[in-house]
Every structure is written in C-alpha cells, then in structure tokens.
Image: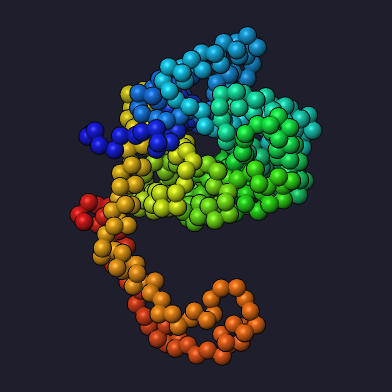
Length: 389
C-alpha cells in the first residue's frame, strides 16, 4: 500500500470505540478477538491516522462500574487522548444492550424503564461533554416491536418526543454547546423500529420543542438494508440543514446490518456520496461506523481502519477528477442546457406567471424524443473510477 492518501486531522476521520474494539462475536459464533481497553483503542486509532474517537457511555465505562472505577477509567482515557492528540467529537448512550431495555428505552411501556433511560442518558451526556463532544447521537436500537399488539405506535411516538424535549431542555439548562443527531434504522435488532428512515426522522424533528438543535445521523448500511438510496436521504437532510453527523460503512442491499469497510461493496454509490459531501462543503466528522471482518486479528483491524480512510480519500480525488474532466462537464452542461425560453415561468408564483404558463406551447413529442446521454455519462464515471481516464 503506497504512502499516498494518508489521513490528516483536517479530514476529520473518526471511529467509535465499538468499531475497532469489536471482538468478532456474531449471533452464530463466539468472539474471535480478545477485548482491548479504551486506551489501547485510542492508540491503535492514532497509529492508523484517525482524527477522533467516539463512544457509547458503556464502551468506556462499564454499566456496573463504581464511581471510583469510573473516575479512573475516564482519567486514563483523557490521558490517552492527550498523548495521541485524538479528540472526541461525538458521544452517545447505549440504550439497547442491557436486558432492562429489551422492550425499548424511551418508548418502553414501563414508566420505570423510561425514567431509567432518561437518567442514564443525562449522565452519559455529562460524560460526553466532559470529554469534548459537541454532537450527541441517539440510535433507538430497541425502540420498536416484533408485534404491533405490544405497543400503541402513537403512544411510542409521543413518549419518544417527550424524552427528546426533556433532554433538549437539559442541555440548554446546563449551557452545553451540544447538538443532537437522531439515527434511523428500519429493523434489527427489533422486527420493526420506529422512525425507520431519514425521512421519518426529519418529520419527527419538526414536532419537537427545539427542532433547531436536533438533526440526523444517517448511516449507509441502515438505509441500504431497506433498499433505499442513501445519497438521496443525505441530500434531503443537507437541504433541510439537518446533516449534523454521518455514519460511513458499506452494505449489500437488503441484507442484515453488515457494517462493512467503507466502499467494500458499492464503490459507485460510495463515490457519489463522497462527491456530494465534498461538493457541498460538509464540515462535520466523517465517522466510520463499521467493523473489521470476523476473520481478522488486530493487525487486520488496523488494516480495516486505514482502508476506510484511504478509500474515502481516493474517492475524494476521483470526485475532483470528475468535476475537472472536460468531456464529463461538457456532457453535464449539455444535459442541463437552458436556452432561457422558460425564464418567464421561473421563481415565485404570481398570477401573471401562471397565466403565461397556461398559455405557453410545448412540443411534447420533441421533449420525449430527446436523448439524455445518461449511458455515456455513467460510463465515463465508471472509467474515472477504474482509472482509465
């Protein structure tokens, strides 16, 4: 592997403790790697060239840790950050692993579970802010059902809204410089999960008391599980001013949540995603929420982490090449050509524009007969990716 495409801090590449710290367990097999400490993970990521590290509360501090143990772990983690220069841009709460959350956290039918989930999240927010996080992600891993006999979906939506409003008010009351990012997923581990897609989340956010401080954290694999176009969801979030964070990985369409290395499956899809993020000037973290193959030892895990970042940078260069390619840009200009004949109809509505538009004549046969050259444009894109242009 060449020394080109090396990550730098300005690229803002981040990984979670749970990603490179994944021990290779799956529903059908025991772990293939021994656990390593959060301090070891920080040093591994620094060696791989990452900018930052993110965590769930219990990735860092075990759920049953004493206060003294918590303080020691956090102290050691802070020292590792200081030693390596890594930062913590994002944090989140684990509201899905412990059996207490087997039927959800904020949407649980049990009010004691809902109260405990809020308590746990308040404490985790404090920890995240203490370590520098300015984005706080919420993934509702257990917020759903296997049977609709179990929960009233309207009540679940209302309970989730009440929790998010409470947490927003808490962050404001504490004067935290913090924004929340909601992460959708259609299913797994629940049969059906609430707020299943980016569109669901964007609609939900607008019902909150403080929608201005809440955005989305879309993930490639989660949208691909449902067969959706991830780029379109990201574009919608960006257009709404709600792309607060993003999870990059890869995934075969329609499969379980595979969390593969970024670009490992759908290179052209990854290319257009990177191109979009770079073209619009997305300034947030490029967070890799993915896992190394279960076959790997920790050297392989470092290969995985380096591969995620390297692929992003290669695709970033390919996107710049695509944007500078004279033949491609001439074709794009031709496809989007505007002779000015419809200028009178553009812009905001007016009665006169509507009248003029109704009176206009269009040659629909000519419109339908025009070739759009998308085959050629797509082939040129493939040739950029294959390195023959």
